[in-house]
Image 1 (spheres, rainbow, N blue to C red):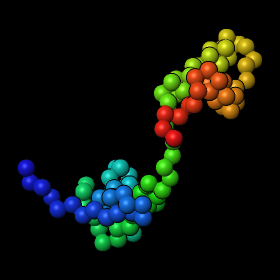
Image 2: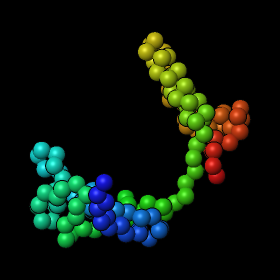
Image 3: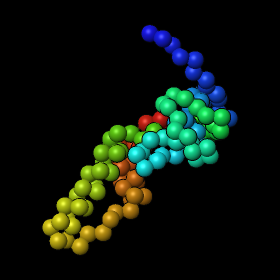
Amino acid sequence: MKKRNQMRVANDYGIMVKKCCASCANKDYDEQDLRCCLLCGKHVKPGKVCEYWEMSNGLKNLGRERGKVQRRRYQLFLMDVRETEQVAKARGLAVGETPVECIRRDFEELFGSRYLIR
């Protein structure tokens, strides 16, 4: 298999980003949903890059915040609460949406932290 010479650059947080049209801040799509450059108007083939390449804002910020991973059990708990509310509304009951802060508090009282990784 032929290995292409792929140019990669690091963002400010050390995350390596492939330098191609898909990672460019100037990418756009035409009427046929083909990727093109906003600046030069040319179509750029997948994996290729034009002379106007600039890292997209989303990729510039990738790795900026560490974030927290929520437990799957909490996600399912939240979905169950929302589903119960929807069923009640479908039956014609006047049910308001439970504030997410209350759902979080209830979950943490029952199961502990809602985060898997802190």
